[in-house]
Amino acid sequence: MHTRLLPLLIVLMAAVLLALGVPLAVSLAGAQQQEVVVDRIDDTARFAALAQFVTEPADTSGNDVNERRETLSAELRSYYEVYGIRAGVFYRNDAPMAHAPDFFLPRAGEVRDAFEEALLSRRSHDPEQVWPWQRSTLVVASPVIRDGDVVAVVVTESPTGQMRSRILQGWLVIAAGEAAAMLLAVGAALRLTGWVLRPVRVLDATTHDIATGRLKSRVAEAGGPPELRRLARSFNEMADNVENVLEQQRAFVADASHQLRNPLSALLLRIELLALELPEDNEEIASVRAEGKRLAQVLDDLLDLALAEHSAPDLRIVDIGAVAAERVAAWSPSADAKDVTLTGVCPPTTAWADPVALSSALDAVIDNAVKFTPSGETVEVTVASNGDTATVVVTDNGPGLTDEELTRVGDRFWRSGRHQNIKGSGLGLSISRALLVAGGGSLSYERHEPHGVRVTVSVPRNAPAGEADGQGLTER
Image 1: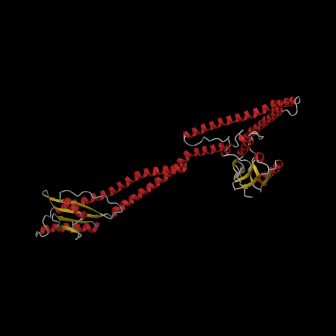
Image 2 (image 1 turned 120 degrees about the vertical axis):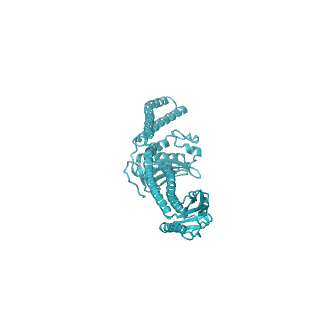
Image 3 (image 1 turned 45 degrees about the vertical axis):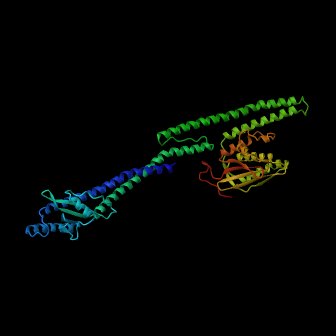
């Protein structure tokens, strides 16, 4: 979420800064050019005032006129030499009254357009905006009016190098300010997203802890917006209620199982006493005995399940290979009695597990594999490791399960309809899964081709949270 929210905030802030910076840069360029244009208007007005007294063409013989023209020409030459600005006063027929440099004439381009506009008895329009990357000039023209008539036009053509440099410098200052503001905005966005998302990350981690069986985990309410703090309090209340309900459920199962054991034991004893009065081969009494023993087994399994879900695991570093080899040896006599070959490939492999829980889970899995494997077939137990997880894979060659049955195997009291006549309560794999999940392990099922089921018992090889922090296991 952080990687999605932060770019969004940065894009929005960049858009705001651009929306402010671009108009400011345009305004700066316009102000710089307007300053130059106003200065040129003042200059053309001064030259027009001088030219009003030079009203005859260049071939006039009057000494006074020639002296005024010489004065105007000297002013224009000095203006050009000092500022590098071309300037000239031209009669209506384009003949120069005075100009500097000598080749400057209103023949074409912007200079011609401004000249013709000034002939209409008005100053030329402001030139278009010049940008730093354009190598253009600024042309300003003003009419010379005598007795209400335009007798000549003053034209100036200014280089824009210095003006473009000033605009560029101003833009660099604006860009530096925008960059600094963007850095501050990014820093503020980082703090803001961290402040907003920190409670979300804590909530996510706590939810994961609860989902993996650590029901005591709770969300710290400190920090973050008020809405998220309120959400954290509500989540903690929900977790407390869920834990209380689960605790009541476990207590009920344990108490019910425990309380029913005594009446059931008394009932079985009375059945045995009644059996003494009946023939030994009586089928009804045999059926009652079998159902009574099955009910006793179910109560024992329910009590084991309640204890497995309630008690905390005793995690330690365990040699998974040694535990698996021990269970293979323990179940070999039962397998031999059914004419089933039980083999084990159990190299030394260390992992974090509760040895009692792991042994119980392997007992349940191997028991099921041997129970459902026909005579003459093989059950294989293989220990392996992929670096982060150690696995014990139990593969049988029994009738297997359908895809629908694979999704239900391990549910409480569930048994395949094809195996109802085989002894069992349907709680063994549920108890095994509860024991493994409490220690960070898992139990999974899949098909084994051409027939049978492959059951994988997985336990972590890295130290769980709170157990030897930072300690890991190396491959053996």
